[in-house]
Length: 278
Image (cartoon, rainbow, N blue to C red; front, side, top):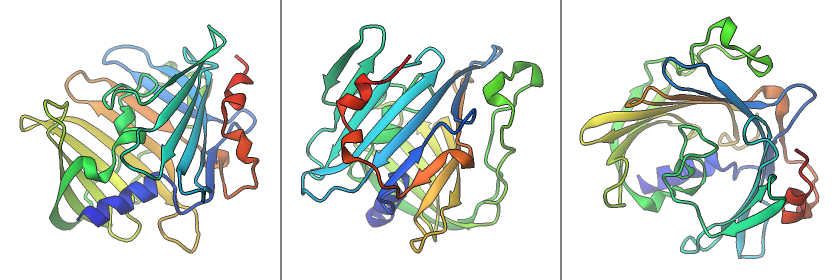
């Protein structure tokens, strides 16, 4: 089962591709929507660029995220992952208010990424060896993937063309996998993931603490139509904290996706962060 979870990690980090970006395409951009129960939603927009084309035996991947609006507008992150799994990832954060870069080894695994319901562990840090894994069997996925329910009056300019719940996954064969964390006194005891048996895309992850489900993350995927079926792209992520009712919806329009482009390797550097305009 460890090997299957390594395939899930492979898909989520786009290792089937040389590079993968979600860009700003005119007025279209990836939007992160956050909503507390009973309150109006807020948004940040983001672009992100991942590069997996390294052969020096040291660097495995580099990842740049740049926030383009909202409270995080102008903030940038450069993350470097290493071939040696025992080596911590390195983080450089561009803080626009200070016009400075701050560097550190890794954030806490359970810190919220960009103020969302997704932790740094969910987005970057969790690797298969951080958990033990048990195959609970195969089954047909029974649901549509969840989305945030919003009234028209709650939508700003970034929320005018939001997708409907993805129901294409209904009936697809999935592995049902239980993963137990190796960290002590952690925010979850175990996760149950529903993983496509052909592409290894993880459609849903349910988090449990003391036997109670505490969080859910749904990921809508679609194929990039490459020879490797693991070459998938995200259409959206939906997350909900079941204790507080707080929700996050990250929507990635198809028109902003780019991959396998010829790009200057020096783009993945602190120089790029220093050029961010607020």
